[in-house]
Length: 257
Image (cartoon, rainbow, N blue to C red; front, side, top):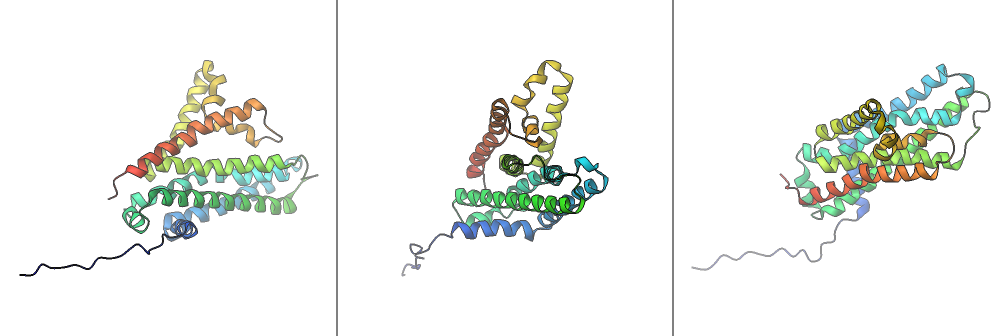
């Protein structure tokens, strides 16, 4: 009796997919799912709706480009983190992670592609918000609508956009569950807000603990003080970087089903 022999598959010449292709795949996933597609449509729609309502109802002296930009960014600040969460969790919720990690076994590269995709989506949201605000200013702008505008204001607005979607990405990595991550993302800030408002002794500590409170000065005209930048850095580390690192550790070791 002769032993059965099997041909070996030589993979030594196989090249790994380029990062640009992985990023395109991650962006495509957001469009291919109904949840992702409708979320993107909703973000664009409410951005236009918010600025239009303000343009029709706002006082003449308030209808400045800066205020239009803030109104355009307000709904995005709520929805962009959800987009970041879904960017990670939809695979684990729909049980397609096995396919993803089979096509690209290096989970770190897949995660890097998700981060790049999140940054591109944040950039797109920033461009849309600024574009809508510019158009609204031209159509509805009051007296001297371009006053008190500087480059630092665009930088602060960009920080708000990118930090929101990256925080959502971090929560998605940490919990790997869409529902759980979304609920906690909105419940935790609300809980901290109630705590700080009901315990006066903690009120001064809020900007050093709560990320949302520390982000408040980003919505004001002009630069932040040194203390405000420090508060933003400390709370950003606690609410974005640390959850991201913990989520990275979990994702790299999670069992794929």
